[in-house]
Image (cartoon, rainbow, N blue to C red; front, side, top):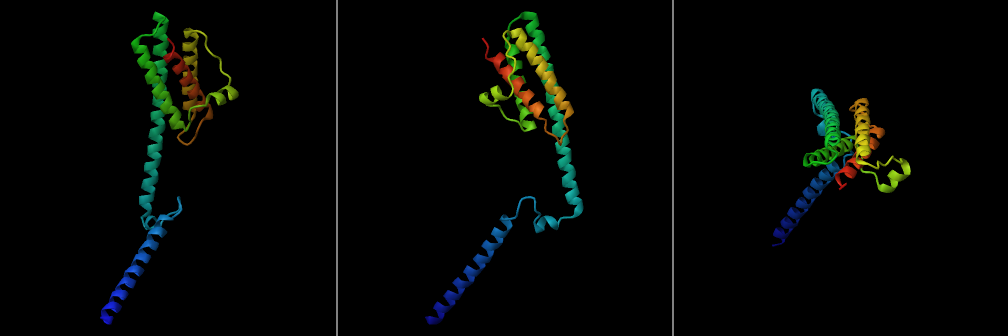
Length: 183
């Protein structure tokens, strides 16, 4: 009976030691600093790291090209909206759909640039903008702001962030929202 108790306690001690070692190993692997390579990553061949770097660069280049294409599409939508308003002097259901599409495009561009929506207080304090008083002025301002946005996007690279492009995208979004909710 005593021998069985001793064996049982040795078995429990062995399980406790194995569990402690396993927990330590998991904690060590999870506490690796970001950006610091683990031993598993260091064991990978050099070609593997180069391949991953090339894939990352290719993905960034493709994302930048897509952002430029969205800018061109936004410019095209803006021209269509301005022409449609010049012809009929009113909004059609297609114009409203185009405004929604334009808002989505410019929001995606701003997100890709790393921007966010300005708070009303910040916008008033930092950049007092000309507020259009008529729909015609609003469409002209929308056109010029979109042209400015696309020009700024063309100046950027996949490695840069343009604060002017972010501010311009916020301006375009404000005027689009003004036009969308205008009755």
